[in-house]
Length: 291
Image (cartoon, rainbow, N blue to C red; front, side, top):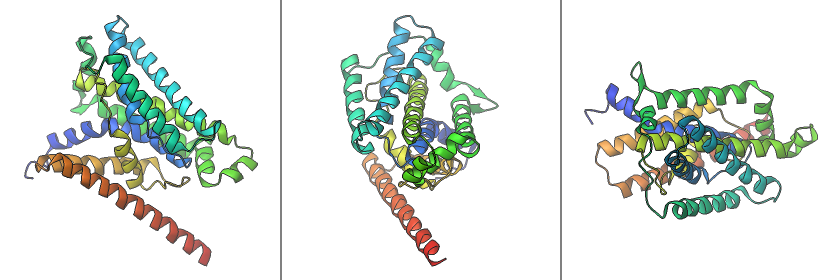
C-alpha cells in the first residue's frame, strides 16, 4: 500500500498494538514460568464493563481505575491458585476463567453495551504528547518496567528459574508456588489495565470486548522468542513480536483482506512461530549435548 510508510500509519499501528502489548507483558511472565493464560482477553473485557458501571454509579475516575485493576489482580490470583494449589493444568484453569468471566460480563450487562459515563475518561485515548499517544507511552512504560523486573530483580531470576527447572529452583530455596502465583497475578492486573485503555478508546463497556486478545498476545510473545516450555526469552524481544503482529494486522486491513482470511493468517503465524520455537529449542539441546 502506498500509504503504509507514513507517520500516521506508524502511530495507528502503535495505538492498535498498545492494548495487546500491555497484555503481552503479563503473558510473558506467565509463559516464562512454563504456564499460559487464556483468560486475559476476558479479564480485559469484564474490566472495561466493570469500570463503566463504576463510573455510571458516581465513582471518580481515579477510584474506578484503582478498583478495576485490583479486581483484575484478584482474577489473576484465582488463576494462580487453581494452577498452584489445585494442581490444575494452566490451560484448563485459565480456559475456565475465560469462559466464566465472559459469561459474567454478559450477565452483568444483559448483553448490552454500557455507556453514558464521563466523556473525560475517553480523553486518555485521544491525547498525545509530542505526537505520541498516551496509550502508546503507557505501553512503553509497562514494557520498561517488565524488562527491569525480569533482567535486574531477584523476582525475575525466580521467574526464569521456575520455568527453566522447577525442581532445581525449589531445591535452591525458591518458592515456586509464590513465583507462579505472582506471575498470574501480574498477568491479570495488566489485563485489567488493558481493559481500562480499551474502555477509554471505545467509550463504552462492551461485554464482547477483548475477545481474541489472548491469542494475539500469545502469538506476539512466541514471535518474540519466548519458549512455551518456559525459562527462555526476553520481554524486549516480545515488543518486536507485538509490532510484527500490529504491522501484519494493519497491512491486511489496508489491503482490504477479508476478516476471515485475516484470522486464518494469524492462526498460521502462531503455528509457524511455535514450530520455529520448538525447532530452535531442539537445536540448542543438540548443540549442548554435542559440547
